[in-house]
Image (cartoon, rainbow, N blue to C red; front, side, top):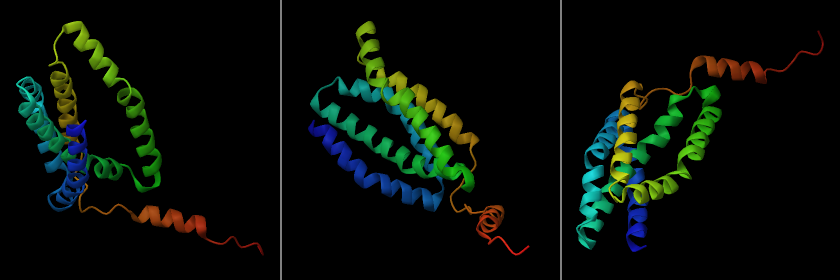
Length: 169
């Protein structure tokens, strides 16, 4: 419980730091770097956890930093991926669909897989699969840092909707 609290507090500090870094250097370099790191360290981190309390702390903190880098860029990049007119709907559907499919099922799935295989390393390869998928997705997305999010057609459409209707005609 203490390690989980420390990692959460670390994330509280680091998520905005990585978000600010992605404002400076771009979403893609930060996200690609974090997902590539997760791809490389996921299974070794779970191996390190087997070495004892110190290894568990080191692995937990390492994974916490990587997760903070992913979360610090993911939230803003995913929002910026959608056009202004559909941003909230697109983000809500994407976020809630993935949360429904994965957030609730992963702990159960990991319990079943660890029980079936007898290996506590199962979460490592699982994380690697999702890191690889995230890396492929990130490499296919355009950079959004520093790009205008409000386009002329968004402004024109909004102005047209707000224009008073001439009732005298």
